[in-house]
Amino acid sequence: MRIGEVAAAAGVSPRALRYYEEQGLLTSQRHASGQRHYGQDAVQRVRWIQALYAAGLSSKSITGLVGCVHTGVATDAMRAQLAAERERIDTQIRDLTHTRDRLDAIIAAADDPDRMRASSGCEL
Image (tube, rainbow, N blue to C red; front, side):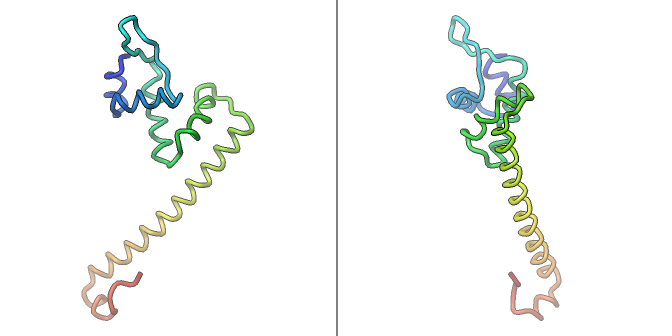
């Protein structure tokens, strides 16, 4: 697949793909004309990279994990890093859930004019 095809299929820009290559997260073969050609698994790999970025992982962290994604084999250090990242994400989920619940309470209070008049404003 050419860079534009992978970018379109994965929902990223060609520039993002070039960046992933610079970071060692993605590889391509170069044609004689200099065009990049990616393997069939490139779209899936880019989506995984995007998911890890969205979860807050850095390029360096992702680079350390990419090997186990493709081989299915993780070293003890990789497993420890995966577990640490999972715990960090769990903490973020708990914090976001708490924030959402507080927002829901504020919205409910705002939807009930009598309750709003009885209180001195939004309870945060």
